[in-house]
Image 1: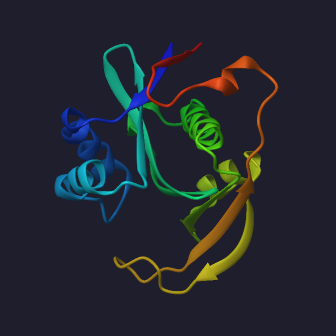
Image 2: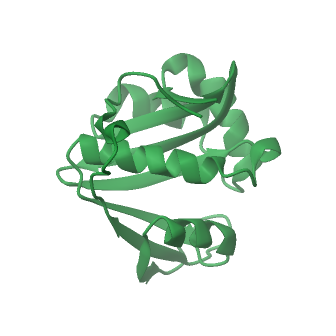
Length: 165
């Protein structure tokens, strides 16, 4: 069973491990500490299975828009639909907190992530040239309109734990 909760300072070490598995230019522990303590727009979620943190996602909520900063699943748990589940939870939470649109950047070469985002209603809207500092790869900008789901789970409050089978 998957559980979702807000990230806290005690989660930084395992999140940095996931960052290193997932990204060629991972964020540092200090970057996450700064996001959690100094960025009033930042909301970071943890996805757990049992006692293990298996993924996380972050976003900035500014007025009625949510900007995904990071989303990653531990390497050994990829390919099981957990990324889709985590993104769905982030979209629900963003909607609950007042966002009506969500945006993100993704490497133009990352077809797996782009496919997931398209499945979740994201569409391309532009390119940020040389966006990634590690290799100057372009980023595809994608947007999605957020809608309230018909089920009662869309009522999730981001500060509480929620479970998903």
